[in-house]
Length: 236
Length: 315
Image 1: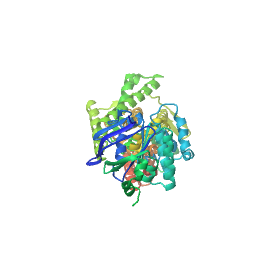
Image 2: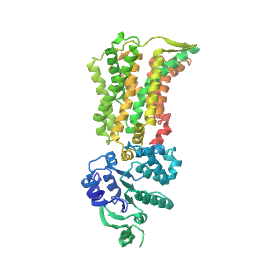
Image 3: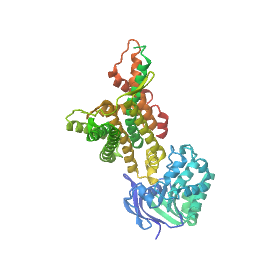
């Protein structure tokens, strides 16, 4: 049984059906990427998993338990953390307050320890701790968004476009960190427009087009696929 | 008049701080709810009125005019608690019935239900009481402290002290606790807050409860000072406190406090200062004209209020 399973998911907004019956799964220890162009339904899929929108059809199961109908804060409580598109940083709060909000549902004593773990991944955040988060650079805000999600001690991490708006060397650094997070035991569902970078670190991937999965396979398989190379890797 | 004595002006300052304290306490509820919902809770004046009634009920239960000695302290403390609980309960129901169903409606819709709720509550109480005023027991020790030309009654000192203590308490809750942190997160970005595991509905209800508790306590202070409660009493203080919140910059907590005192002083010191100009005369009845003229001026020339930058940066 997979840790996270999406089965026949149909979801959208108002009259628009952005996701038209997709199935995918994520196992322990995996990085799985969801690639596709703008509007293919990648973000909608993540929003349905974390309860921000309600699926019209289909099921989403986490460790065998259906998440359909749960509110976002309840999905966080079962162990799914979601770093949303645009990062969702609280710009008027300090870096420390942002990080502590990530641990909002936790009552255990390990919060300070996990704070140290986040600083080990992102030493910059320690330097910026008392600073108002809105004054951070784009790269630092992405670090904060990921670090904050880790503060929930999630069993699954959903990342939406972590490379968005970042300089190439920062994209490399962020993706390196994603590999480290997986190595530390948290599987990741990674939505990316930067397919080249995503396929490089992913164990498996799915290609989304207009709300349906048109292709799936290992990261290496997809990176070799002619159609993928033409459409998403900018090769002719 | 122009050469009025120092003590006259100091009296005006004390009066301004007294009334300003109550405006500030009520204004906090407007500004906090606006912060999380971007909505003006126009029924907040009635929440204040119901708090004042609840406090009145507690004082009567304690014996009314016959309360004396150490029992005065206990009775007033109980009145605060009763008023805060009553105001908070009404606010929770209001939020659930009148505002939550319209959470995603256009912003005009909850504004209209707020006005509807305000009128409903006001006339409900007016009907039940036969539109008659009730009289707060006169139990607070009279007397005053005088230092040179400066004079403040015990009641005024108590009123300002309680208000400042309540505001300090609120500030600590909002800035230093996990509950306050979640309220600030919801105010800034509701979606992101829910992804942190914050129960957004609960954070919004908590905001209403905190604001209502402040208004309830203000209702008791108002009763102790003006010695009257009636169903229509919430309207003017409510709209004045709203003015104070706008003056300070709606959405800003320090703004509501500063705006409350500013308005209180404008109505007293400001009005007398204008009257001191030869040829002008603004008797006390003009205080409302001055308050609302200020509102119009602020909306015209600085719609973001005193702490405006902060609010626009937050938006």
